[in-house]
Image (tube, rainbow, N blue to C red; front, side, top):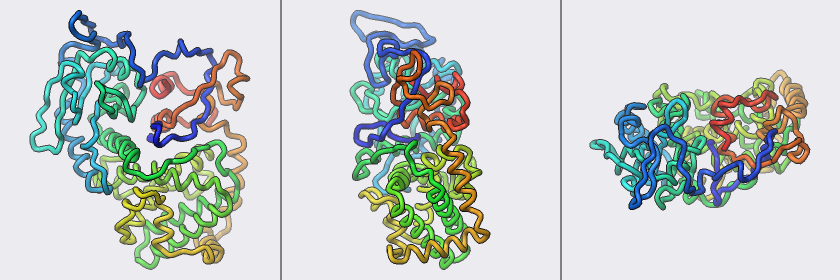
Length: 455
């Protein structure tokens, strides 16, 4: 999500409407709330007057039969070692990680604990061979203690700060559906991306600010300029000379300054590029040129949209999804320009765009002329304004972004018969997006996607 739901990096959450009535007692405990009731698992439960009640299978067989865990550990170690070299201060091996091993029905069968200081207290732990790796420890654990088993069973995707035996841990599903198959390359990339968000909690100075996706600037003027930005980034990435790259980067810088001056809502670009764009950049960089990963060093431009009518959901793209690719592309351009302190400056509070604007030396007095030149170079036929106007009109007809699951309307939760509003986390938003759900098409979310992402 690839996004945040932590206290230190809180974001404005959008309302989720349930068509069916739901009361607090119906909802049950959250993934962060201990419970004295047993988790729903496929294995037997054993109890003893002398030990904490246990849940989930009582042997390693069912857990280890799901996946080749030794291979999974080696792949994760390789990714962690590469990721450590990418971003100043970030070492994923410093984070305690618990991967919930789930079968095809989503039932918890055990956990894979990586670098967790209390792995042997989670349940029946068997150490895996980590010789030749940089990992501190790796255990497959079964017969999970009831409280932890319940949290992990009910976790829809991942949790940045789950209490596992008193340890503030990162938890993520491993299994349950194909997206979370830990034997795939992209699972390792997702893990590295999400664990990076934990690093941002303490490693990044300042907060993320609000994330008012529905209230974003879906105006013809802003959509036109945002698309010009993406065209400028594509030009900078594909440039065959240093001069051409710098010219394209200066176009981007001037357009961003013009957008910020025209509409304060564009500050969302800077903040989200700083948090989500950096995490996507990390995915590209650690993968190198290995194309088994969806994001790698060969395709920083693949998700940049140069035609606003090709964006699918206008609001979903320009107010949310665009910031992943944009932030990563900006950082890649900084690399190509030879800027060596970008990560440190972002850690200290600057956005990638601010670092790039400074690097190419664009000042406010130059903006008007540079934007006019960018329009001539990047939109020589003058067609983008009309496309942006059509996209802005389309956005007005689109439903609330991520805000309604009752059939595509924008009704207030209080107006839905029997409905109860609750807030949806951006973790859940990103989960839906990652599963290919287009929330702007007005279609009802499938039960499978809903159950996988919404607690």
